Image (tube, rainbow, N blue to C red; front, top):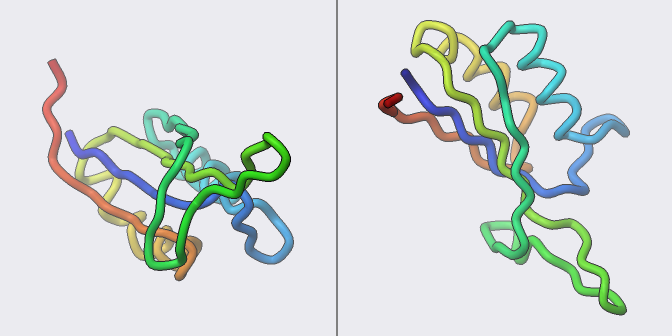
Length: 99
């Protein structure tokens, strides 16, 4: 099996739509086995910090979308996912073992 990780920020948008929703909709239409969105509490990358603290409220936290499926299912999705994510995040894929 293979694990696909997509790292973005909560407030990222493409064409006025939340990037997280666009990615999840794409993955559902591609019939992947499943995907989970994880919310981070802090982070940084080439676009700077992924958190903003404002009067005790944290916004624009990092998000990780995790998918585990076969290599044959995930590899063909990579060009479209990179296009959807663009410069807003990072897409990685690696082999994983299910126990």
